Image (tube, rainbow, N blue to C red):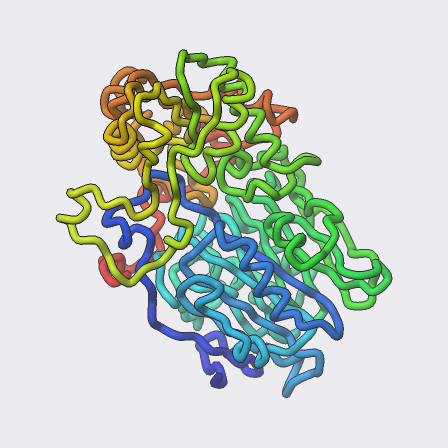
Length: 520
């Protein structure tokens, strides 16, 4: 590792940041994946006499599904460093958690407070400079920051930060860095950590679930609508005050931490070493609008929302889908992995047997060998392969969680027919995606969304299926057994809960210099 002499003047921080990058999933397939792409994952541990970097590694490992482009951990040393505040060490790089970290790296990250991040790019391209956590220095000591979500006023905020801090040098093209600079500026203007974080949050519009490391402990915060999830728990006895914050409960489970509750929408929580009760307060009050795609697709099925695992919810939406859209068939199969629970529910309600008709290569995530165009045209099946023994001569119901562009679904239907299926009926366990998301999900512009351009019959013809049906929005919310108004459903109905800058709808690369996307 080497001392960080960045333009943020971290000072006592020690970082190890590499500039190399791995192929993205898009590069692997030669085209954009036919799914909404993940949000990011954030994780933090505050504990004395614990290997907080190792614990954070495992937490990020459990949250790997939320982002596979980069990973990073920043750790506050238990002992004060030179100058104000403790010493902070950080390691981040492009790639999966298991590629970025090994035991030798983790051993060089001792301390008592760790901030971790997995990234999928929503604002800002997939480059090393955009990896998190963000590390800045302030008059009160170092600040380590990790963000899940997406701001819709990033352009406005960037201009304001540049006006506030004339000497600022942006080192990334992310909205996340802007929030960190807003906190830094508020602290340097004389505010304490709590007041500075509140001030910065009030300048942000959009989705943001944050974990923030400071010399005064760990802060966790959600935007007023709580669009992205954030939970907390503890390790050991509550009197030991060993706190953990995670994007999902699966991050708590992997290290044996309890699930104590959610960081509520519009809430800021402050965790201190030795304090068995965190400080909880509201920084704003807005109607709750959890992203419903967290329920349908993004979050891991073993994560808990509204008092139960998402597996149970996804089985229920399959049951509702079978009730709403019955069909005569011989077998129900799910598209691995996210379509499996709904397929089981569809089978249970309809009485049609469930089977494994598609085999997924679970080791495909990153590869340095990309299929050629000729190989793609020949139908190379990198991720999914159908089983003729299961499908031949059968009327097949295929359950998937969503269709965005229809490209992958069309190839999948052709492969199932090639395996001998006599009929293919596709059922989607969510409503049609007709509007892009601006709150942390990477969807296409509206003209690229197949359900925004074509009728149901036209989509069915494009996919080559015998029938096609989607879950209704009413059925989706009914299965959640929660108030419909608690969810953001903008991708299905265009009812965006947060006003956004006009240019936001143009591109997730809005903060990039012209032409920079070509260097990704």
